[in-house]
Image (cartoon, rainbow, N blue to C red; front, side):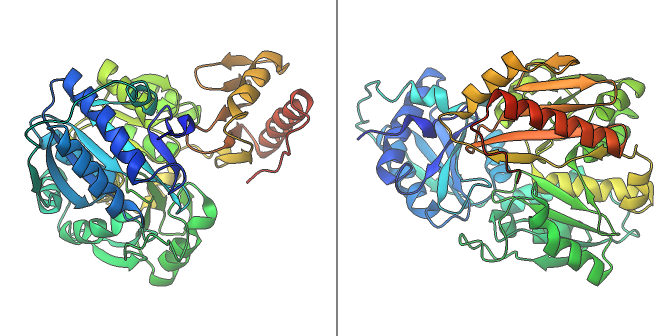
Length: 456
């Protein structure tokens, strides 16, 4: 069977079910994973799936194939990606495979993978597909284990919350896998929980589970205002990203969430903070002012996790809502734990989240903006733009092209998970923001005139 090379990406493996990702493909990928396990001397692996319609069938195929190659299996069933990472951390072999389409459309599915406590890219697995491996004479053992109660108990012991400071929180799971853990977790933390779309349903009948898009936060904003809640939390399809709504119904972008956490963490310990190229310039300025060391990273959990291995930061995060706590947690991206730390932040400050936000600089910035292209052309477009762009400023090429100007900055990069270009802009004033965005778009039109520049 031929497997499309395009599904093996820099971060993970992801494609359309059943055309690109199906049960037969997963069986072949499992062989490559077993080879990687052999290389790392790993004999046992945790596996789980999110709530997508194809997840259960693909998980069975993964389980059967890995077992045939002699790998022992700890199947934790329907979970979020953070729960799978948590199970892997607790397992002696520190390895796990998650069947997930993350925030992609509902007909997608794929794999996120960690072996021997290290992230493994889709590209690395692709290179192992043609290797030979005989099936084991003794199949690997298969055990089923529910990790959720262990996780909740450890989070409760990790978080310090004033029992007299009870918060009302709206939880929007977007019918994604976070519905299996978030409502109970926040109830156990002492919150009054108002549930929104917490039933796991792979059809995503209410809105798409991607808190990075403002249109997906409108139901949460309305519910926070209606119920006079203290905050709203939104999770993506596999629960490793978080979105935050204030008590006033305002959206706080993840780079500002990182700024809030930096103030808390760097006031206790000094160390480095990792952030991706899409984050505000105000973030590294704040980190330096607090005595920390800012480190800019390419976007993507794979790059952030490798940065965590290299630099051992206190905190890391991305504009997309992936936040990695490495001060007193396990250093993987975890949307519901991030939400718990937001609850702890409010409790420690004894102030509303909107008041805490008001202490931070007022930023004139866009959310993440996208231009639809194709997977085949997106990287060439970025290469052409980086080479031919005539805009003057400090150019950063670690991931696409980011240009820092005296009055703000702009970014153009290729998405590694979708056939899109990603843009973000920030200015010192509203007029600066508009000028920078217009200049970038004009340059893109000049360099790549065949692109339909329709921002979404």
